[in-house]
Image (tube, rainbow, N blue to C red):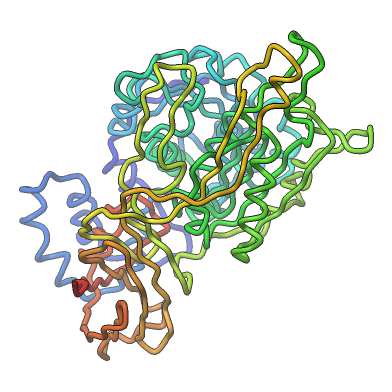
Length: 492
């Protein structure tokens, strides 16, 4: 593979051409890109120009959004192993995090593709081993037939590890606090390489990757759909998955005991998947649950015959993901901080817990300030021997029970009623913002009515290119762009 020179963020976007779209004024494009690339002092001098721009904001965003490069357009039709980040600021955040990837040979730079992020299993194997795995090889047939690019990345380690974690002895490497940013960086790296639709990003993981998939399905609004295989969870903010459909598959014999040398621990016991299915069903959230007859390492069995749930997930031309597209403007959103697999104690390290980073944003809602207090989460009470058991009695002694718990945080549930009316309720939120777009049915020539915890206030909002760029800054997500914003103080 030809090694490409690192391309600065601003130049990579400026080199983009948008076929079939009338280009916005080049000067305002350059101003917008300069603002994204500048420090706080440098941004101040540019803000008046961006705020006063009266042209088509969406057109400017469309022209500056990365859509790939001519150099990478020719790298397709073969698996690339051990590649690294090329965008300097992304590389700086993810040193020594190689990845494998595959681009279908029919990739056309004029047509956007979806993107699949595959999170491997493997527990505690050493960093760098992923390059040697068959991470993409087993998926080449379906990838070549469809219109998704696949990234098989290396799980977090080193610079992306919590302080004090043992480098090659941690089994929860897809759930550490930095993992959300890491996955986001992978998306943005490949948007600079290829023409990717930011609203067709799919996450898929198995075993350790399935544990991470539970976490990220709960934690982020990045994905159009999430595949969760052979995973587990302890604490979970399942209600925050309101706009993230999931596809869960698990072997009912994932955990088993035949002898001390022929057994599987209860770390990913099938009860965890069954409880997740139960909770999502009660919530009424879109999801699929498939339980096979298999074990953890031989999950593809049903009635003694080969059965592959992942073929139903995606087989190239068909599958659960093919119609999945994230809606940037859902009617109802739930923001919570922190969220996901909120706190975790990894049994293979020192046992010190790590806490998730703040998660202040979800689609068009942001928690601006909050005073942490108790917020409800789902919780599994796990008792007995969860790791490898020496006897069958020890193995049978394990049990998991569905329960509820609380953590210190904040939560907001907000609904767009249409006709410039929004209503919501909060827990421990002091102020929050609504990020608005005309496609949400908002008429910016009229007052905007917001009711919070039964208290109604009216606001005015004026769209601007500056606000649109600030909405990108929240999570560096080119699919969640909103040109107007109102900030609401919550009454005590």
